[in-house]
Image (tube, rainbow, N blue to C red; front, top):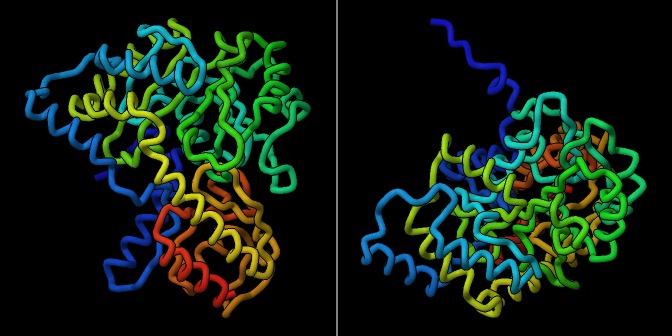
Length: 394
């Protein structure tokens, strides 16, 4: 029997972060002692006060289909959060709740991009941005920004990348994979370019906004002249350790939010009811409730940075946000290590998995072929042992 899948799925790459995590799990199942630094998933449990809210929702018999765009009470909580944390005024009809921030991103791309449109991806970028753009039959335009410029693009680079076909630009600050954070002044300089192009819309992915160690995160939509051209994306996975609960949301001009609700209504409908009720409690809680997680990430960041700086050939800078390091490891390209030829970051990442039993992610997946990504969202003990292994095999 001949299986004829669509060109759409055949051309869709597998997420490299999920692929490496799956490979690590497979090796673990065979009894191999793998330490995974590949997934961007906090190792904390969901805070008890959020779990209690979920239990209460179950006891109160929340079990029916939910509104496609989310419960009114949840969208009210999101509006309060946007105002409190980001100085953004979004009405309820401008907010859409989805099954994770990834779905929010996909909804926006699907309702705005046509075949032949261009979407700008400042590299390094989160792996799914490019795949989502390709699914929309649009063209991803990558702007490179290496470690020498702290993985942040310049206004000049942005201006040169915009063409009459440009429709979207994806921003992620704090950044996955680099941990880079754009300051208010840096975003303003980019906004000065964008206001000259009113047909270009910004997708501002702010999922790591509370995991920040230096300065504060700033929302592009908080600039009055960018508000109508910005879609703000956020969710609960990172800051509240709720990855498996699957809830994201967006704030956008009403016409975009309405289109996203229409799109979602034909794909998943509303996000599950228990998660939504728990999310109300999470979003209304003061940020101090999750400070203990950020404090621990800060300590791990310091430990990992010091250890990485001891490895010959690693070029690494401190990361002001998220929970990743993104070292440049191009020093090893063209070298042979324990009989294995290293031609690129993918070879290097596979070498570490094979020889050190440590799972990382190749920078190729993020549009940065000289780097690898290491997550420090795991225990101090495992981080120290993982980097000891890496140093040993190099």
